[in-house]
Length: 136
Image (tube, rainbow, N blue to C red; front, side, top):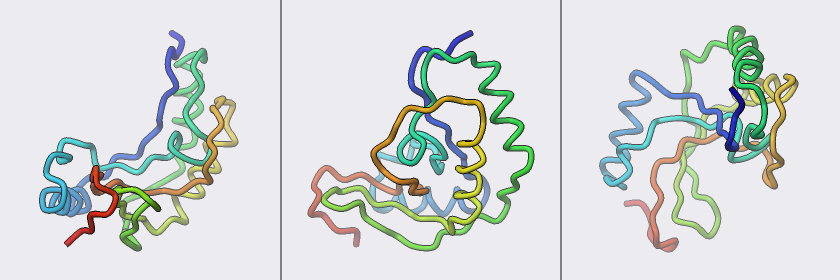
């Protein structure tokens, strides 16, 4: 089976950190509580989305090989940030492990679409339509 659409690769957050994110979303952007608590590893920045047309079996094999050497039991957020000129607020993790994972995935045989932005690991907390609205 071949991938027929550009595809993101995410790391879902579980446990206490997931509860923390859902608690903040419930307070500041309740319509977004159905979003997964995740940090994008490929897609929104850095290496971009996984390119369509590749064999899914090869992608899974390559990514699984990388993931087997990474443990993320101690994810912690470093800061709350806002993307410039938007209403998008994000929690930024301590990024050393995410940067290493991103580079390891980049080194696989998987092909990625280009992204205009450097890698910026983050968990989206809320997305307000009004980009002048501040979190209280």
